[in-house]
Each structure stands twice: as C-alpha cells, then as structure tokens.
Image 1 (cartoon, rainbow, N blue to C red):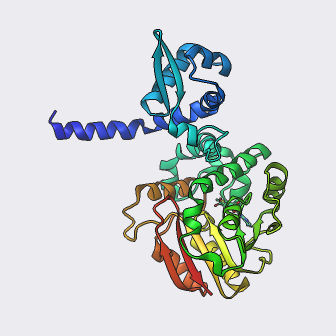
Image 2 (cartoon, protein in one colour; image 1 turned 180 degrees about the vertical axis):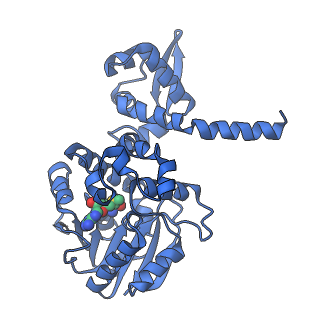
Amino acid sequence: MSSSEDHWYRLLTDYANGFMVSQVLFAACELGVFDLLAEAPGPLTVAALAAALGASCHAMERLLDACVSLKLLKVEMRGGRAFYGNTEMSRVYLSRVSPTSQCSMLLYMARTTYHCWGRLAQAVREGRNQYLHTFGVPAEELFTAIYRSEGERVQFMQALREVWSVSGRSVLTAFDLSLFPLVCDLGGGAGALAEQCLSLYPGCHITVFDLPEVVRVAKEHFSLPGDEQIRFQEGDFFKDRLPEADLYILARILHDWADGKCSQLLERVYQSCKPGGGILVIESLLDEDRRGPLLTQLYSLNMLVQTEGQERTSSHYHALLSSAGFRDFQFKKTGVIYDAILARK
Ligand SMILES: C[S@@+](CC[C@H](N)C(=O)[O-])C[C@H]1O[C@@H](n2cnc3c(N)ncnc32)[C@H](O)[C@@H]1O
C-alpha cells in the first residue's frame, strides 16, 4: 500500500469508528466516572472505581484506558498499580460540579440524538425527521416528542443551558445590546441566556417566553434568577401575543423550523417589536457556498433527523428577516459554535 493510500485508509477508519469514541465519552459520563473522580481526594484504582460505580472490574479497565488515550482521563503508575484521575478537559466540562459541565447535553445526545442518527439514511430518503420511527411520535409533535417525560424535559432543558456557560458571552457581546433596555428571549427555556444577558447588560429587563410546560418545569426544577429584572411568561410564539420589547432574542429557534414557519414567527416578532428595536438571531451559520464549517453541516443533518428545520447561511437568514420587514443587518461570526445576526425594525 502506498503512503497516500495508507493516509486515506487511516482517515476512513477514523470516520468509521468515530461513533465508538462518542460512546466511550457517553458511557463514562453515564456511569459517573468523571463525577466520582472529581469528588475523590485523589486518583483512584480500577477496583475502587468499579466498586463505587457498580461496574465490572475488567470492563471498567478497558473503558478507563480508552478514556486515557482520548485525553479524558490521565493515569499514573504507583507500586505497579494504575491510578486514574480527571484531565483538565474532564474537570472543566465533564464533572457535574463544574459550572461549565456539559454532562446533560452528552447524556441527551447519547439517549436521543444518537438513536435519531441511526436512521440518517432513511431521513435523507424521506427528507424528514425520524421521530415517528425512532420514538413512536409524529414529526409535527416535535416538542412533545423531545419532551417525552418530565425527566427528559428537565434533562433537555439543562442540556440547552449548558452551552451558554461556555459560549454565552461571545454571542451576547457580538453587538452592543445596551441600546435595548427591554429584551424578550423567545423560546428562552430555563433562562440561562437571559441570566448571562443581565450580567453583561445590568440595565436591561428580560422576559423569557416559552411554552407553558417549559415555564412550569423551569420554575419547579431550576434555580431561577431571583432577580426581578428577569421574568418568565408562558405562551406559544406561533399563536399568543408576544411580550413588548426593544430586542427579541431568538437563540437556536429558527433552526428548528422550515422556512414557512420561520417567516410566520418573524412576521409576528416584527409586529410586536418597537420601532427602532431589533432582533438578535443566534445560530450556527453555514458558509455562503455551504461547503463548511463541517460542524455546522453536521448540525444541519442533526436538524434533519430531529426537527423540521436546518442550519442556514447568512444570506438565507437575510432573506427570511428582510421579507418579514427587518433591515440594517449585521452578521458576526463569533469563532465559537454559534454566530450572531442583528437586524432592526
Ligand atoms: C432548541 S430550544 C432553544 C432554547 C434556548 N433558546 C437556547 O438556545 O438554549 C427551542 C426552544 O423553543 C421553545 N419552543 C418551541 N416551540 C415553541 C412555541 N410554539 N412557543 C414558545 N416556545 C417554543 C422550546 O420549548 C425550547 O425552549
């Protein structure tokens, strides 16, 4: 085999086995490996980890060693025995006690997203999500489907919160939002982005608007900001009157919906927006030729298997926003996963 064939074969093997890497990460999270190591006074042996987590010793050893190769764990040898500990990556992002933990999103990906991706070829044949086949729920009941039980609803809402602990500042400082004292975060979930917005722009007042069940769960299961500058309002953004605001934030909302539904929603936002007000769309932007970034292309396929929507280019959002009446567009690639678009009424 020539060295270039060797290169292609290695690349092919990496692609084919990529799902195993995800599963090692998911399994270690689900078993609580990183949490136990975060709480332990020092590195632990396989036997100690397996006993505490109720797992098989020989299987746990394989999992831990794979984690070491993936830099999710580190290992040191003492007296001929291996002691495992968290790396910087797992300490910061994989233990639940960390304020930047991404565990709930990883568990959501393991339990829901992964199963939907198992039907990717069929989703491409049909051009629609696979919830009916994967979970027995029709596509049009998307958000009922995502929220199949109270536990999953809480987990999904927590999962959605997590990314903003890492990327919230970048998207909220892409533009100067201090011009907008009255803000509405449409589909704002449990209010993580609203909290960040308030910490960056202490003068603003924010209404977090979401479906009644989501607002109820947010109030019951999350420690919401006690601050009176953030309030929650229940409603359906396709049907109910939207709160008055100078700025509407739509973070990861439009990518859930087909163009027709996006236009419907944007027209409603335009009607409610004060003159001179704005709309901040936070999404992962595809390059204009749609050749990248790869992560956004993968997210767009993720929208295919899980929702009615897609990831879009800046000009696609420009067309949707301008046909709803918005003008004065500004686009900002933030360098993190999510980008920002500001337009004015
Ligand atoms: C993908 S999540 C994004 C949540 C949040 N903006 C974020 O970025 O973390 C979509 C949100 O839209 C909400 N949502 C979906 N349909 C809605 C509707 N018809 N009216 C109000 N909120 C809705 C969901 O409950 C969910 O909180």
